[in-house]
Amino acid sequence: MLKDITLGQYFPLNSPIHRIDPRMKLISAIVYIVAIFFAKSAIAYGFILLTAILLILFSKIPIITILKSLKPLIIIIIITGIINIFWYQPKEGAHLLASFWIINIYLEGIISAVYMLTRIACIIIGTSVILTYTTSPIALTDGLEQMLAPLGKLHIPVHEFSMMMTIAMRFIPTIIEETDKIMSAQKARGSDFSSGNIIKRIKALVPILIPLFVSSFRRADELATAMECRCYRGGEGRTKMIKLRFRFTDFLWLFMVASMIAIIIVINIYLPFYIV
Image 1: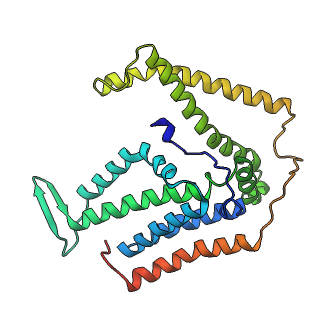
Image 2 (image 1 turned 90 degrees about the horizontal axis):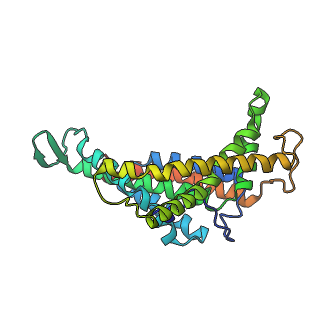
């Protein structure tokens, strides 16, 4: 399962989304999330799902790879759906499907759960495709730094913050790979992580966590030493080999993403099918 986690990974392909300016990707990711939260009807959520599929196709990343990235989160997604079903507050005219003790299941609660699951899946897939999957860590750092540049006048270390965020995302795949290696080594020594009750499984993770923390601190120290050897002194006086410039296609991309909000609002008004 650890190998299926693709959070923070970058797929160096040649697609239209890869060529978009990273600053415009950051803005469009925020607009995309806002558009999802505007959806209130089944048709609107269907449009969002269609948009997520189109993003995958335009990015040229295999759909199987992206769907596998949701596998480690399946438990969280299922729990979220169950909570939305059982904790639904019925409104006037709600359709009761089943009742047991204090538990009531309504048709609108099931619809709300489906909406929530679709929202979570589309947010994870869409933002990953727009940002981490199609943007290199260096480009993402430059884009984030320039987006937050006005905060530098308030003496906020924008460059250091951008570098820290990018390094954290960059090392997620490395830590996952290291965890998989440690687990394989422990299994070869007879460790069992899949049997027993929850307490035994938690205790079995101790031989994994200790070497993982040691390895992470060692990698952090090696990275700091490497940056000091290259005379890294933060963003002051730092130059860039490639300067970011907006193009017409970048504004066209932002317009296409922003138009999602207008389309969803129109769908909510004129096609209100199963609004919860």
